[in-house]
Length: 144
Ligand SMILES: [Zn+2]
Image 1 (cartoon, helix red, strand yellow):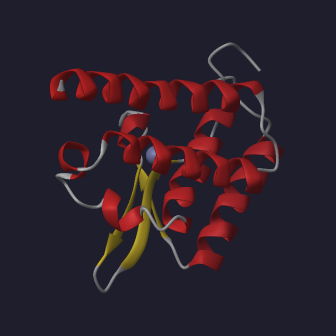
Image 2 (tube, rainbow, N blue to C red):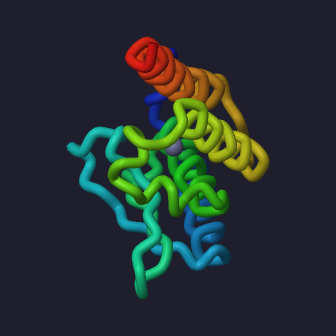
């Protein structure tokens, strides 16, 4: 595994990870929409659409990083914070701690179901949570 976690996996690993994400999604009745590779990973998302149900938008699982991000998005669906997450004003209106709590729950769900939790997963979780931590601090300063 290289520093960024983007090192290519073996075909067997790619197959196993994709299969795991697909199996979980199927059992949760979640539609998986695959984004083209040029779309940045930050656009991965989980949504609950009226009539269509839950869906996640991810890039094909070709690295350990993409695998854990896919699990994280499924974690949002598994979590009851998903409806809040769908509110476009959520980031602005909700209490500063709520976003962080929702992100933490999605990561811990991902960790609980993952076949592996490599270094890249630990770093991705930490980096993602610190992004929300920074946002929360900025939000606090604005409130003071
Ligand atoms: Zn998230």
